[in-house]
Length: 445
Image (cartoon, rainbow, N blue to C red; front, side):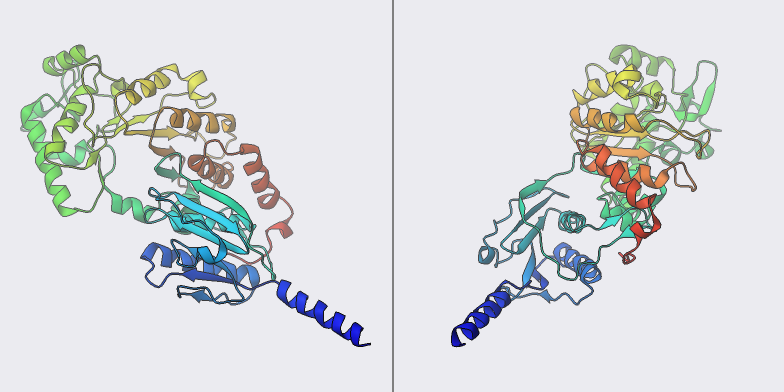
């Protein structure tokens, strides 16, 4: 009898030792604001997943009895055999899970939060649209084992112009530029000549400031070989930067038409350098001594060809637009001119932005069979060193599969090598499948 009681007590003791430990979040006492913000996001979702309070511990040692998610370079990493995270660039993050604990560390202002969203997806959470999320019900949550992994975005700048991405929570979850961050980062955003040298202010008295289209002066574009125009643009840009000093990007770019200047001086520059893009590039290249900020010449078809004998300055980013491409074929297979220009510019600069079009404008609700082009195009941009990508959909609803398109593009903009079939299967099974598959707790993040 005593032997039986002793055996029973041993079993109960062993069971208590091996019982599932409650999850907690461990934040170092002097944690920077991005880590503290990420901790609060994680806590919100873990409490929805488990249906229980999740403690946020701000001590240097994690109390016994918890399975912690540690954020950043926490003093308790060795306590669980976790690695010290490496130095990380902006938006990148480091994950490791072992011994019942999980580490998330990130670079810049968003890396840690992006790591949080990746852990939540490992646990089964999804944010399919701003209106449709899936959060599993896991009362006895166990943190996953995960090999030491660094994730770095394929493109440091990722912006998606589809309705879901205008929702801040959805954009943050999918590691995209939010509208609020974009408004803070950009001083001027594309087609800016009309703001820097307005036709309504100068054209009547000084038509020579504007483009000669072969027959007459046109207020649609500027004559950039005119020294006075260059000074007006420079002074206007200097004043706008003074008004918004924290902005990172200032676009010095053509208006939205093809009426570039063909006056004798501009035409001579075109002939010398082999591209109508040169006058705009020269203006931006001269600006750095005044403005140590990236500017973005915006090159539609007429001014997109890369020049010879001149390079952009190190703080000048060149934006190329795929407006004329057949979006039913990949760029490499069906848009040879644009592919040529991407290759040529990538040989001249490490700061290349692509304005890509992934929508057809004739009828937003009609089927548009370009799904097979999305991944190879992003892979092509990545292969040629593009570091900024703007994917042009449309903000209005309803659209043809707009939620699924946005979901797929967000995943591929982070990692163009991701398994596209798996992404679409995961989305369609829950978003378009049985209604019960989207049950679970609604997201409030």
